[in-house]
Image (cartoon, rainbow, N blue to C red; front, top):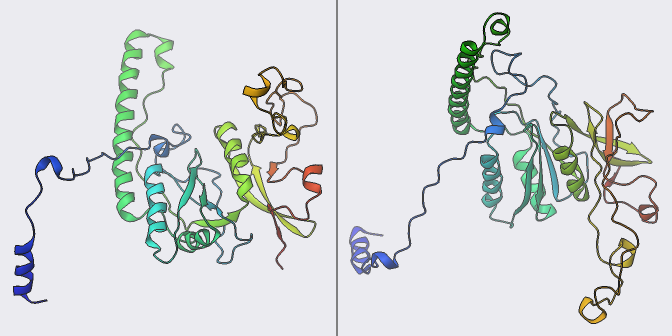
Length: 327
């Protein structure tokens, strides 16, 4: 296109709309700092910032172990991490694919920011997302620089608050009580080791159970994804490596007499509220480990994505939480 043609087109542009009809510019939203992602476990035992002791490191492999599903497990994440930016990173990867429609239906990040569980709208979308994430480094240099600034500012604020409390307590106490006070810890240096991400497929129906167990389980719990061969099938297993307390997950009830709901055809307006009564009280939520109970095992506790020995699953030819063993 020549300059004259460009100028002619520019002159034909209509007048700008009145301010009251113009599309308002999006309001600037300041970046929300993820304070949980900046936390480190044992502040009194380290002078600088290193990988958390005992963090799980998965070996990155190109070919997946499990069969393709819509659910992805993303391991080898390391703090500091901003949860909002992590979700934006996933959405950007999904939007970059112009060939297929990829939508992130759910993105969950563990409290310790060591792994994530992501649900994609289709299996094809999950395959694409795994191809982009597996073996990649997150976050990039620009995001890492922002995290460095947030971390250092957070450390300075923490040090100033601890110093203020220490001085106030020192003035209030005297003698032995004053000597027992712990002095504030100097701000730590931002040092972290970003390692390639490990991305693997997991059964979709295990998502609610696994996220429930981690959210309600031990606050410092370290969970590991494992694949176990059982009866020539590969089963995805959720293992707690430290502690024994695993909250018991009870799937939500559905309607119908079989699941404890009203019978088919029941109408509360036609039949009246008292024409149907539940058979017995609602079941109490209990934990899979009761403190003080005998027979506790020192081995890591596992929760599989299916219910062993349940007649409800026994009648099925194949549970979708299992995958044929690959040789």
